[in-house]
Figure 1 (cartoon, rainbow, N blue to C red):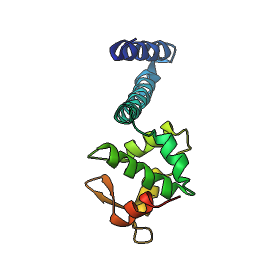
Figure 2: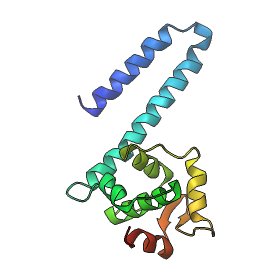
Figure 3: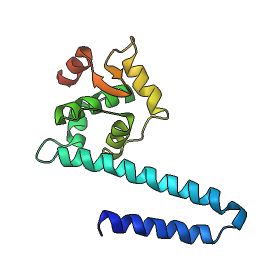
Figure 4: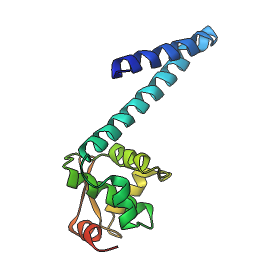
Length: 147
């Protein structure tokens, strides 16, 4: 099934659900279901991009297992660094969320705060510019050091 067929299938399922809802609630239910389906699809696109870029290279899961991060700050840093090595230019929080999914790890309760903390002077591992993350020299040193 191609992407268009998958999208049509999702929309048809949403319509089936909305048809069963009382008429005064249909608009709200449709909007909620459609938005969540759209977000799910967008997240899959980030995952697909990462998996495609990492073909014939050490997988993200292998890299994380090798580095043995002990906190979500370290995991998020390693994800950003890995994406930079793959050549991703504009790394957003959605890319980092996709990395957590690919590695089958629980995303931090507040990923945005987690990334801000990694940018803080306490850690200084990441910098943010126009909502995109990149590693600092200190962050790169952490990532390339032996585990």
